[in-house]
Amino acid sequence: MLRGRFLGHVAILLGMVAGTLIAVPFGKVGPGPLTHASLFALPEPFAFGPRTWRPP
Image (cartoon, rainbow, N blue to C red):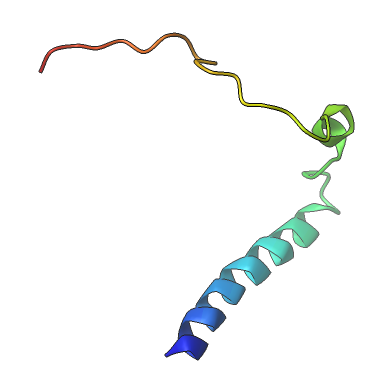
C-alpha cells in the first residue's frame, strides 16, 4: 500500500520535471523572476485588498 502512494507522488514530481525539461528548448522557462527574488521573505497580508464580507 505504501509503495502505491509513493509511486503516485513520484509520478507527479517526474511529470513536472519532464514538462519543465521539455519546455526549456522552446523558451517557455526562464530564470527571470528568480534572479530578483529574495532568499527569505514574509507574506504580505491582504496583498489583493481587504477582505469583504457579504451576507448570504
